[in-house]
Length: 46
Picture 1 (cartoon, one colour):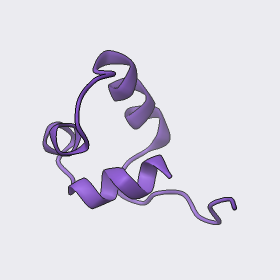
Picture 2 (spheres, rainbow, N blue to C red):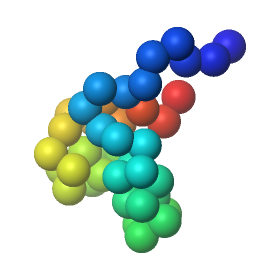
Picture 3 (spheres, rainbow, N blue to C red):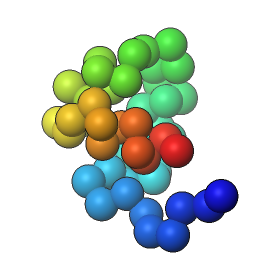
């Protein structure tokens, strides 16, 4: 199954850069750093 629409709160480039810089962080840590909710991170990673 593929995603029909891109995440609206986080750009893919921003999320990919954050994952490269902090590969072992939890979703809630990533969300706090990017200023979004943990669920926004969850859906962006799907």
